[in-house]
Length: 443
Image 1: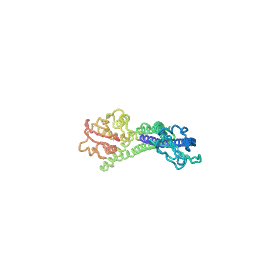
Image 2 (image 1 turned 90 degrees about the vertical axis):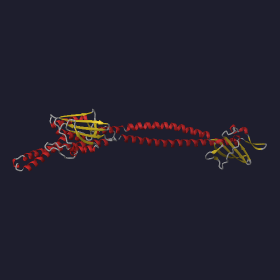
Image 3 (image 1 turned 180 degrees about the horizontal axis):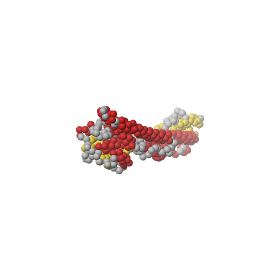
Image 4 (image 1 turned 135 degrees about the horizontal axis):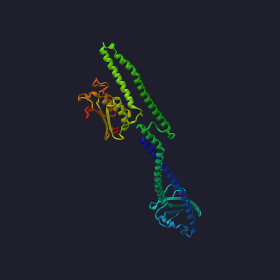
């Protein structure tokens, strides 16, 4: 879920960045375009005023119509000043000294020429044509102004605006991530509580959550309650069934011991054997139910919390003369379902107790990513040639000991489910040593 949260946050951040960049670019370009168009309209009016001043500077002289150089702006006298004009009257033409040898184009229509025209020295010219009639003649005036400084200013504004925009974007993204993290905090708390549920540290999720999460939390709590109730009813039903069968079994045992069956010894022995098997099976299932206790589904096995009760229960079942020692590191937790580990250790310790004379030892250690479970007893042990055989489900070695069947088939299934290894050895105590190596999940 943590990855999911990060993914949601990254998606929101990427979406916000994309939207802000798109909107920012559109707004910036639109603003610059509007400013550029407004500036061009302003300069067009200014150039029209310049054209009218040039018309006013025309006068009749001794040689005809002349241009009074004293009445025009000084900028038209400086070479490549960025201000240029050209006046046409019939076959007469005047050009500003500022244009030097550059000839201004003559637009076909009056007004501002669309776009910019290349001028001298890489200048970009804004050109306006104006037509007048004076002295009985048509006068064409072309006035131009260098627009390059404005373009340079626009570029500077773009760079400065881009820098401020980038800073604002970073600030907004950081603010967005902070706000998203705060908004998703309740979801993160729910994730932590689910992890605590998985470890058996709580019974249900807190109901005090935002309105959007309430249906999810309520559904999970309902599922937990339903699962726990189902397990409790199943456990109770198993106990009730076991107790209900005790009386019929006692009656059948009584019937099997009647004198009438002495003449049918084979039938009597077979009947007693099957009844004994039934009684052992019922006792084992009831013992397993007692070992399971009240636990949350999916809870992990905490050695310090679970082993004392398990050992105490087995010592009560097998008698106080049997000593069960266990050893595990402080706070050692086996990352598998508590029920599976209880059934695994319950079977192994129960079998060891049935074969042991006085002592059973359980050791749980962690070796890098592996957990090693070792059970030793001081019983008769198992011959090397029979150790593989007893791993098969239902194999029994000594039919004379009541309930002694190892039942390692169940243990083997759990070990295989956990992707572990099960092996049998000779114990330092003189009996059998069962070693189980379980690799940690995702290791």
